[in-house]
Amino acid sequence: MTGMAVAASGPPCRLIAGGLLVAALTAGAAPAELVVLEGGRVLKASAYRVEGSRAVIELPSGGLLEMPLLRIERVLDDEISEEPAPPAPAGFMAAFRDSDTVPSTPYGELIFAAARRHEVSPRLVAAMVRAESAFDPRAVSHKGAVGLLQLMPATARRFGLTSSERYRPEKNLEAGVRYLRLLLDRYEGELPLALAGYNAGETNVERYGGVPPFRETREYIRRIYDFLGLSGADAAVAGAAGR
Image 1 (cartoon, rainbow, N blue to C red):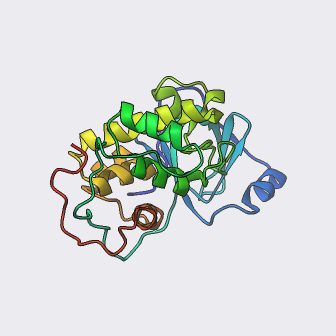
Image 2 (cartoon, rainbow, N blue to C red; image 1 turned 90 degrees about the horizontal axis):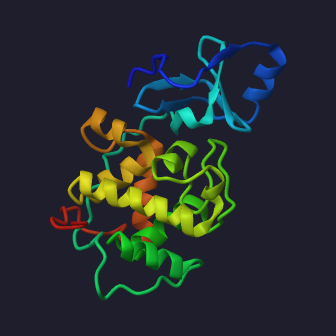
């Protein structure tokens, strides 16, 4: 990824300036982040902040860019991992099975219902909810993602939700599980690729020809594996998983 700032079509964005705003924006922000816009274009940011329905991005050049939060699909820590990408665990089925039961977690019934509708393992969905929000439907990230499966406004809109509906557990789960099903289908059941797509976006999976090298994404996949009890699993690919 080049990190080059690229203009994109869509609602207007504007450059803003001011020392006080720069100082406020920089405080408490990550050292560097990658902002993925709708359509897959990428901005490299030295700081990022959400202000209501808009995002304010500090550019490495020192300028500030403001745009609607709906323009942004992902925000990732700009840190590359030297560790190998997590392999697909053998023996785990990402698809729903008749023997699956309701997870013994908060919102277990809703998780099970959404998983069954979209033919995805409820264990997998519950692990993702745990990793994304710790089962808090009011969870909000500094990136602008909210709810059980931490949906950005652009992702919510993609699956027919309003921004406020992201806080409703059943709506958030429905959209998030639909997205997971789409990713499993797109990547032919390859669990690491589906999880990478959920965290980093399909564009980055395609750009890198597999799990992107971002430390955040690779740690996210490993965390899901840990929650599923797969951290010590064989590295071989589970051929039919998710189909």
